[in-house]
Amino acid sequence: MQTHIYRDFDAYTHDVRGADCVMMLQNPKRRVWSVSHVNLPGVHVQSGRLGSGSIVEGQSWPDGYLIYLPLTDGCAYAANGTVFGRDSFMILEPGCEFHLSTRDVHDWCSIFVPTDKLARGGGPAEPSLGSEQTTCRVTRPNRRMANQFKALVDQIMFAADKHPRLEATQAANFAAKEAVKAASSIVGERQASESNRDGRPRIPRQDIIRRCREMLEERDGERVPVGELAAAADVSERTLRTVFNECFGVGPVHYLQIRQLHQVHRALRAADPDAVSVTDVLVRHGEWEFGRFASRYRHLFGELPSETLRENRAVRLRLSA
Image 1 (cartoon, rainbow, N blue to C red):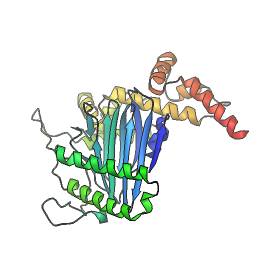
Image 2 (cartoon, helix red, strand yellow):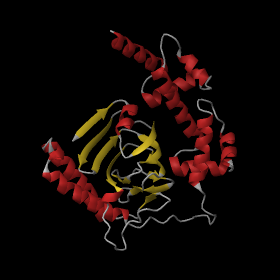
Image 3 (cartoon, one colour):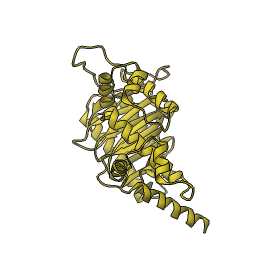
Image 4 (cartoon, helix red, strand yellow):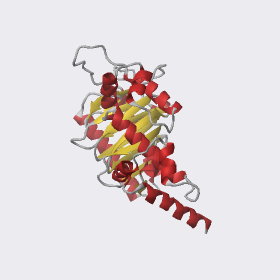
């Protein structure tokens, strides 16, 4: 088993497997993030702990199913706009686009199983493999199944911790079979119903989010007003606020602020401190209220923009020494 503990959120995001995604932190309470991995034959098991909320946008790996279980009571998880808790699973079918958001400190665990390993028993719960359209879906709450899944992950993690070479033993084959069996049952679970509270047609959230993302990518680094984002998505600002709150747990104004903060953070870490200043980076990202921005930046990353740039200079000096 490999367990890594990070004080740097970006380093944590690069260690999470099962999907290609971009993560943004929000509401940091404890600036510690960790993830543990166990590689069984053909199956990957992982668990994570976050000292913050997070917004995750990405696409699952194309060759298998990722079964994700939230572990924190009282923390609302939202997958593609569907809110769920610790007794429900998020299922990422191969190659599907997804959004996952949480606003507070939380834990999670997951199992990734290649498509060709899933059990095909022919029963009513058999997963519909080979479908052209893949989805991110949330199952109905099932406490018994959730507890069994968590217990299985805990057992695998415990065994790998006690025996560092477990992954190369015969026991790993049996553990992998149990993981495949559990994943096959969960993939066959029914999806949670999405009630339409106000009687209106269901909003095509994914289309709206996709249009917004395309515009933001085209104008990368620019400061985009919410009105222009709504126009690009061909919806009203009110609808845009609804969709962003459902998918990300925050409105578009807050989302754009978080996104800009992360862009500046990455730019400062990549900058040559002898060639650019903090203000150079900020104005390139459309920011002119330097004091307010610095306050928001420190709240999110625990340091001022100038400190990020100074640390970058120290790293470069160490590497050149």
